[in-house]
Length: 136
Image (cartoon, rainbow, N blue to C red; front, top):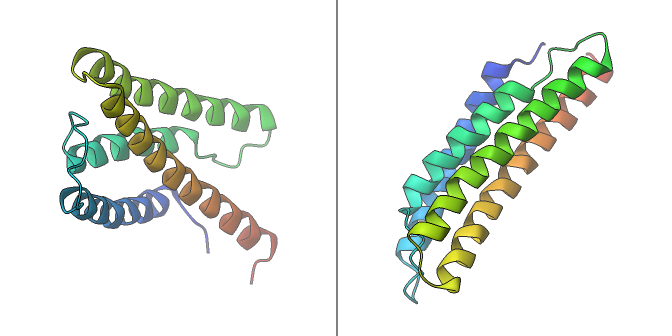
């Protein structure tokens, strides 16, 4: 059975929708008032889902014959992630957030989304490579 970008992105969308719901519930019902990160928790979830989804779409390999093309696609995905993350953090952190605590909270939230997204991406890559090694 062949895996596709569409199946990966659909699974990623479901994964992030569940996580965004949990993140929003925890953020809004935290016993101590959560620091202001400018974005609402669901807005941050959607923005980062779009950034990472585009980067994964760009970087997913089509099983090119030369490794140079795969590397170029991977590097293009890395570039999209880097630009997207900087676009989410920098303007808000320097124009709207006043305290260091608010800036650190925003960076930690984005970092957590990044780690979850990359864990999903790497898990998918390992699963598909093992599946392709042992067809059956």
